[in-house]
Image (cartoon, rainbow, N blue to C red):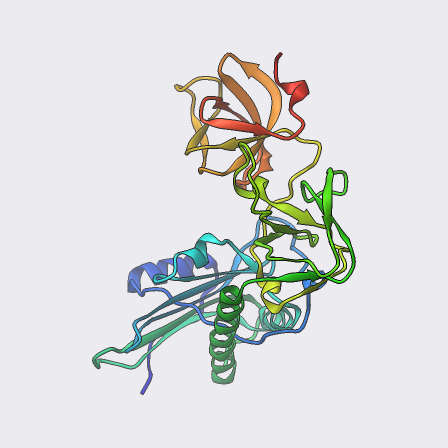
Length: 329
């Protein structure tokens, strides 16, 4: 028998977080509702910074569950499992049209609530927690809560299966392969009819990035990938619909790629305030300005969700792209 540990109507997301911290409940999120939409049906991002609209956690049980899912207001979902760190490291994945539409209908009509259901005080008890941040004025009824629990469980399962299945595309006509996900980027060759690649990432406007499995001097992370355009004539497997979403990379920008963790300082000095830290493989646009061994960068064009300019040391980074005009000599 499931026991409801807590149930309350909350007015804002900070209240949710306080409640979760107090209860100390562990995380797990499950899924549902596989849609039939493709990359062209990605949800349209909402203005402003995305907000968390749904979290779902599942822990314990005989199987030792440790699943989690977080969905934000821009239609992206991040799934995780303590036994498979690669799931979370892959980054957020877009929801398909059907589940995104279903969730939006709740958000517009049903107000916020959270609850945890447990098997009770028994060995290997399982706890399922849902934290929902809706904007509707309606009070969540039992039928709504049961529907959301089922929705989250099915959605997690579907996204997990698609993520594990991976993505494969096959060319049904010769398709250009670009150096970057940008129409102005250099065309490096063609994926010939019948050729197949396994994309690892996608952009919000439909570019598919795959590793060419070839030697590339100095290129790491996203800059190793080669890109198929949104109009490429290829067939897509189901796993392509939940590929990790990555930031755009302009063909006309010189980027700095961190070779190790790289602090971004407010000025060209180690004594300046640290604005952010680029992880190994992270990137940021180089403005062309230098001060000795320091390079000025534009955080608004980077792998970090920040804006403004900063400074980084050049000794633990490499430059990639059209950098001739920004590199002395």
